[in-house]
Length: 256
Image (cartoon, rainbow, N blue to C red; front, side, top):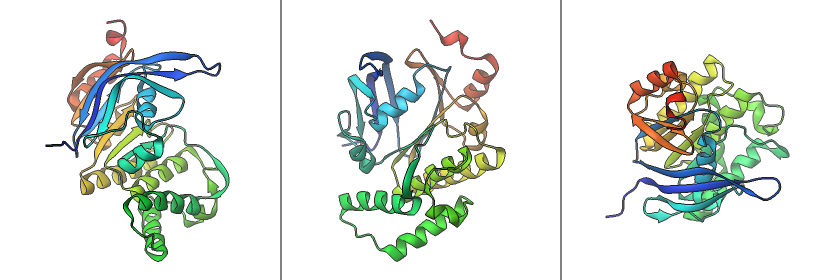
């Protein structure tokens, strides 16, 4: 029987530097996320947390040197980002890119159409616009942002809200949040956490939260918390482990 899990097996990866040399970052990551489960990864700066996120999403600057990534039995290790996205992976980036000259609404429509092309579903514009309008309302974003260039002139919180808006429209099976709480005020964190948790519950989606702090985990309670250091998971625990890590720090897990 084929599982519906996201499986990360003995994953090793390196980042491709500006001079085209590679620096190894991930050193054997093993993690299984089942549908509906919430996992959190915490760890010091430079430990490889974001490298894990980008490697899962297929970012071209990160090279998987060994190990595998599979979703619902399909090997995604060597697939392009668009294939991984259509398979059901979604990454909310720590620093979303700005795209001048392309309106947010056209960007959203193009992304949704690309997903629909895989399933053969026709994009009905009136239904899509209604869905977009509801998503903007849910995330408490002003409608004027639809006509603005993608992320250009947006605040950090506005960019992060639009990342979650994309999530709602693309309907992934597994969601990776790479420090989505970074730079958010209390209200934005509450709204984003509410919408992510609501979507995950309604769609039985797996969730991987990468964060430095416990505050988002007070909004979205994890089933499992993993401390990440030196490119791999050093120890796992329950939600109380996150509070322990925030109090004691990560020194015990570096060079250990």
